[in-house]
Each structure stands twice: as structure tokens, then as C-alpha cells.
Length: 359
Image 1 (cartoon, one colour):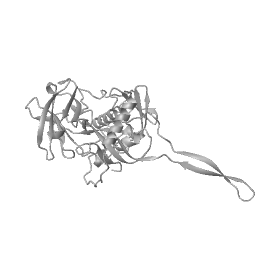
Image 2 (cartoon, one colour):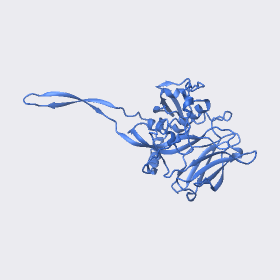
Image 3 (cartoon, one colour):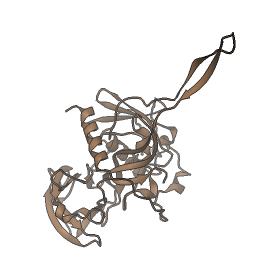
């Protein structure tokens, strides 16, 4: 199956899973963003997760590889025949691009793990529908940016390192590489070295969703990026999912999800990710609406204790109450066997999270 067909099939499935948008109550407690820190910093890096926020600047989700439609002004001629004379009157008209009121896709956010000895952010992808007006037929750049920047509308417990003013202006495919052209705000970064790495990882993982071995090259207004964020990172070479998966600096958490937790055709919920944990195992617990554990299972990873390995398992549908249940993924401490490095992912009521692009 070709990459484009795979993306179209994924998109069609996500759209079919998305229910009618419910009303969005106002929320009083905004997510922590470190906006004040950004006012005094130079230019950035782990996100893009810029906006479930980034505001759709780069799908990887449903990347079409085509340039967005452009507003065009055309001139037409109308013939008017009063009495015995004929006069041609030029009239200027504007052709507008059709707009759509929602965009559905997958973006990578992050969560700060509980009981962590490391503290680095864990990547958590979510499937969502962003409600707002977007040009029909665009490459999903602005829609993705909007999702990455949804602020307090993000699913509970999840955050983005991508600043509100960072936008993926366009994306295009060159061979096996995706080129993401950013605006100048991207250069500033996210306000700190770890935040910068998180922002870049959010963006790279989002843009390569469905093409996990792909590369991403960032440009700003078409030019290479030689100094990004407070550390002045050189981004003139393409990045991939392994670029900032560093075991010494540990820019990523030891447990990360690589796919949204979605209901499968048989009704079960699939949980997939990567982990670098003691004895190459992780534990999954299903929590009810009040946080009580109702089921627990151990899962082996393909590598561990010094290397990242893949893991995958299914949760029986009978254990999940959409809108109430959540799934916790963690490891046990090698020192005292306590729960450690835990991330907890809520299950949306309708498979796909419903967000407002307006915040």
C-alpha cells in the first residue's frame, strides 16, 4: 500500500470515528506554557508540538505533499448593450478558496511523568478533530499548527512545548524527505534546551506519523536553519525520530507512545510505544473514573536496560469506559520496586478528541 493511500485510509478512519462536536465549556485553568520565559529568550527546540498547537503546521498525519490553494483575483468581461451602442465593462472579481470547518488527524503532545528519576517529557500522540475554519485542500499545515497550539483545550494531563506563534507554513515531499517550512518565530525555540528538544521531537514525530523511518528538514521562509533556540542548534541536516533519542542526554522519557490509543475493529484498544526500562518490561494498568486500578498486565519490549525497544499490547474493550477510563504505562524501580516513570493517558468519549482551534 502506497504512503499516500495509507494516509488517506487513516484519515478516513479517523473522520469516521469523530462524533458530532459537543459544546465546549470555557475552562478557567490554562495549561502551563512558560509564556513569560519566552519573552526574554533568543531563538529555539522538543516540539512543535508547537501547537496541537503549532497550529497544524505539518501533518504527517495526512500530509498530501501538495501546495495549498492560493487566493486568486481574476478579471472578466461583461457585455452591456444599451440602445444602439455596445460597451464592454471590465469587472474585477475575487475567487475565494472553499473553507472547511474541521480538521482530523494525529499530533504528538507530551506529558511530564510521575515518580520520575529523569523528569524528561514523554511523547503521547492523540487523534483529534480541530474545529475552526481552514482552507479546503491545504496540506494541513495550518490545521496541524492549530492542534498543537490548542492550549487549555488539550486533553487532560497533556501539554505542548510549541509556542503559540510558531506556524508550519507549508510542507512538501522531496524523495524520502519531508521539508517543513516554518515562520521566523520557530527560530526562537521553546524557552530552554530541554523545551527546544521537546518541541523538535513533537514536530518530527507528528510529521513522520505513518512514515516512521522518514526524515524532516526544517527551513524558515525557504532558507536553511543554522541556529535554532537558545543553544543555536544547527538544523541544516534532516532530522528523524532517532536524532534526539539520546541515551546519555535522554532528551526523551524512558517510556513514550508511538500511536494514539484507538479502538480496533474487534473492539479492543491498541497500546504501542517505545521504552528503555529495567529488564525490558513495562506495566500497563487500566484505571477507572476515580483512578482505581481495575486491570494490570506486564509487557515485554524488544530491548531495554540501555536501549529503546518497541512494545505493543491490546486492552479488552470490556475494561474501558470511554470518557472515564485511562491507561497508565510505567515501570517498577530497580531500587525499591515502587511505581516509577508513569504516564497516564485518558480515553476520549468518542475515540477522537474534540478541540476548538480558537482556544
